[in-house]
Amino acid sequence: METKNNKTKFMFDRRLIQFFDWGLLLITLLIISIGLLGLYSAVFSRSNQDAILLKNSLFMKQIMWLGIGFVILFLSLFFNYRLLYKWAYLIYFLINALLILVLTNGKYVAGSRRWLDLGLFFIQPSELAKVSIIIMLAYYYSKYASEKGFSLKDLLLPFFYIMIPFVLILKQPDLGTAMLLLLNSAFITFFVKIKRRHLFVLISIIIISVPVIWFSLKGYQKERILAFIDPGRDPLGSGYHLIQSKIAIGSGMLTGKGFLKGTQNELSFLPEQHTDFIFSVLAEEWGFVGSFAIIILYFLLMLWTLHIANISRDNFGKILAVGICSMIYCQVTINIAMVMGLMPVVGVPLPFISYGGSSIIVTMIGISMLMNISMRRFMFD
Image (cartoon, rainbow, N blue to C red):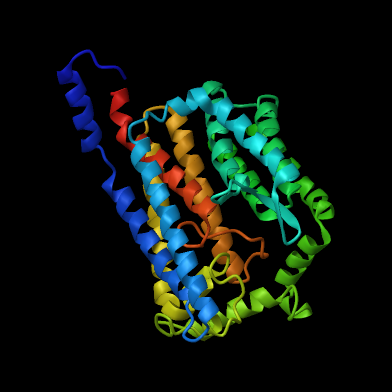
């Protein structure tokens, strides 16, 4: 939107401030605060000097990443989210280029290449791919939407867009992120209008493809799924994470053991306690009451995100908001279900709570996009 005089410019600025989404910011800050408390507790040690140094390092790094995230949030307010419509292809190709670069020059850790070394820090392009595919699908579906809905032929190109990053991420290998990208893309696709007959065919194809996916999994990935079905088949190996997580969650009971008093965490029985299994740390210390409060906050965030999608005045903004909602929802659901033994362990971080720079930045980018959509809805009046 261009302005022709100072008065118009002043009105434009005032309306932006008027529509600032304080509710979205408040919910985000509450979840972030819980995340910082959980991370501090997850790496806390009363006696181990190395653990104390680790605590200080990880905690400060998390604060740094959150600070960068809020800078991105602040700067994004000065740019119209509609620019993403114009930049969709550019963003998509740049992220895919990074995914290819990871396979050739990525940092090799624990049998996989997932990070690029940029000198001062590492980035995980697969996390950025979550946002790029949302933007790409929002661009396509909003541009080619029709009253009749999409046919299977119309969905061939989006399928091609989805499969490129999916395959590249799967080759790292990173099954958890790849499945998240696929699941999130499915949510977005089902949100847009699809012809009924074609929708039934699409669902049938997905169901039939499940056995194909199983036989394409690597041995350790199959073992994780089998450990989910029966953790006791290998209690010191593939089932160890899940068994210890259940013990931590169950021992928290109603109100928990208290902040910094979780024994599973303190005695280092709980693996990956500051990343994938941080919800188990919170559940042990805060109990059912605290865990339920965290879930309620995420539920409020989902409702607020869907509200933003509802009040958006253009299809591109609606699909973007739904895509971001789906991205956060899938991660929250899978992570919590995973640590409770309701889903296989696939290594999915809990948004705003698990330690991880790339995850924090990507989620903050999502919140920035939501804020932008919410603030600029008046531009379509």
